[in-house]
Length: 258
Length: 87
Image 1 (cartoon, rainbow over the protein chains, first blue to last red):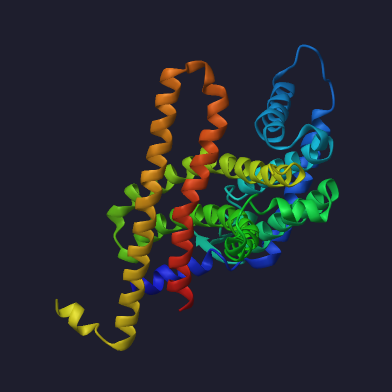
Image 2 (cartoon, chains in turn purple, orange):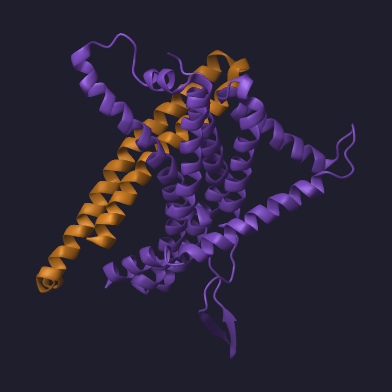
């Protein structure tokens, strides 16, 4: 019984599928465009809170992500990409923690049927994160070949001075590790967001699995604690790490360390 | 005990096995990630205690390391979920 309920919780978190991801992605893009458009007006040398926030985000992306990972000769091309990636994933993650009436299910309160409110992040969908990781993956190799030439770029994967017989072992490993980057980059974000949502769901689901009403205060309190932790820390860190790793991969392809 | 004996059908045993696999897998993953995260923050405290002026530069590296380590437990969770939901 309890096992079946667990499985329902796990499946329910991933049933919203592709359409939910599309809507959330378009919503995030519109939100960012609107935010940037609103940021443009009334800029001054004595910044107000709105301008300070915008400058803080810009400086975070420029100082912590772009300049520490991408060589300066390619900064003008790849700083915008890394910055968009950070903002896009951050907004998608945040949208995922706003309760929205996502499903068609209704519940009755004193005869009035209200839509059920749920939380769903587009980044808790493997298709979305894999698409983002694929952009980074292809940009990495295209830029590596464009800046170094195909021969020099692929040679840079292999450590110099490796003896012949060892190469048979190293070459497949290096090729696999390039694809492992793709998997780890997408699965890290996906699993983090999915696990965050599932922890909250499971905490609340415990009430119904055990049908114990005295669990309500504990479950709600722990669930709320996880919610706050996710919103304050995980959301930003995952967006930061995805953008930073994208920058590091692209930067290391442009200037391989021989 | 009676409940346990009553549940030992094939389907019950399969569910039991999945539950144990899920629990042990995620638990071991959490052990590794816990040790790793502890090491990262411990080293960060030592580093800042020795050279407080480096805090700004170290914070970025610290969060990168934290996220990379924390992801390990989610790989375990995902593997456990795959075993639990799909098999």
